[in-house]
Image 1 (tube, rainbow over the protein chains, first blue to last red):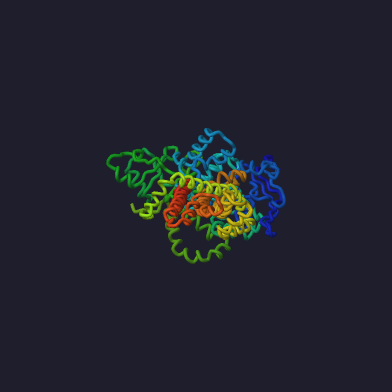
Image 2 (spheres, rainbow over the protein chains, first blue to last red):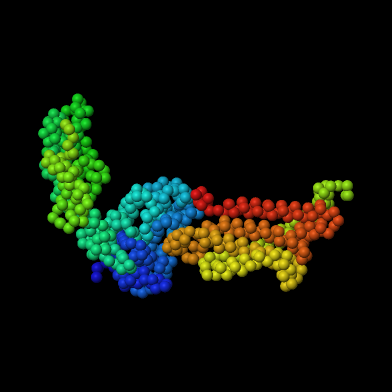
Length: 415
Length: 220
């Protein structure tokens, strides 16, 4: 037994619908405070049923569900639901109420005074970065993404500790969706909420969850952290659900930046002259130099463009150093770094140790190496399954890898 | 009087019997309103109830439909057997005819409320009553109003026939006109205010209906 009492506990719960349709069977599940739990499965897997039993929207046919140690069957359903935030796929904002009225439905049910409700509503719209004058608008005047933001804060407005979300972002476009995923993740972490999130989207689950519960045909197939799920899928079903691509990627997950970074990056100190900088660039065949102080602390970078344009006015490297530089810790996971390099279009990311000292650099070329290793690495069976990729890529990828790796650094620009 | 045309006669009649026409107008209107109001008081809760218990809806709406198919004159006569001559018979008839549009519109209005909203309302911890008066009724009130509006227009027509069972109202003037020789003007003095009443009621209730339409919904 963990010392802490689970917030929600399912004890051998079963739900049989009228007509003998078994929705879920033998569900044993513990949800602890502060966890972000994703229930994932195909339609008909019982994930929504499981979630809806927590706030008694559905009553289990058998078994017991405890909420903070209390059997929910002994708690008045209405009182229970007011303690649990509820967000549904279709947003479910009341069209005849203003945003303010919508946000404060539960506080109103709980008979908070008007002043407190108004204050809370303002606080809430600030939280999701919507202007306060939205409070007086009607839901139809907001975009889908904004509406679901309101849907989310409506579930938080009465200080609920547990939030249930039933495929809340299913109907949104990918960009809005991503923004909202980040929003709920931030809110959850910042406010220490516990979230139970139903989805069928593995990307979403892997991104948000701290605990993923894979369900199929009314049974829990695997209950694990995202990392466990990727590294040790319980069976073929989970493997398929996670997808071969992600399993391959997952192996890169445990790799740290330090393992793939190139050591000895092209660096220069601020005191050096511009001529020295150019000759170093030429020698190393790069268009950017990292700037470090004498103790090798990362200070910034200089690039060829600024060197060219300010050659007349500036004398030392320090004059043209740009200090806004993005870097990673050497112990960071490669997965995150790769994401950033690819998404933000960085050509390289400097790597520092815990004392901010420059120890290496990750470039697009080193990423190619890492990917190359995971695909054509030790394991033979992935070659078989990825035969399509294999035939398509090696001819044009291999030489690129070689040349890039040979003269390291940035994608070589002509100097 | 014989040398006047129908319109002159009509204005002459109104000028001389204005207060009589006005009192019949008021009587007519009140009979219709009473019948519709009683139907609303009973029909709206029935509509709400059958929206919650779908199994009952077919039976209830079926019965209301059957009532609606009985010709109004026949209905008046049947009820007259029970209640005798007078106003009560007409009010009862109006009541019965108003039930269908009111029950049906209430039911439809409730059915049209997005099920997701009701799920959200319940999931947030509203009781059944709270869900009803905070969500379902506000969202269906304009449809319910449309039913009342229909009922009232029909009721005004039925009340006109009610004069046959001695209830008075503008129908009385019309019958008077049909009995008199060259009574065209008197018929008009009864028929035109009836038509006017129906049109104005329709307009006023139509306006009310739009006002009751939930604001956010109208904007969409």
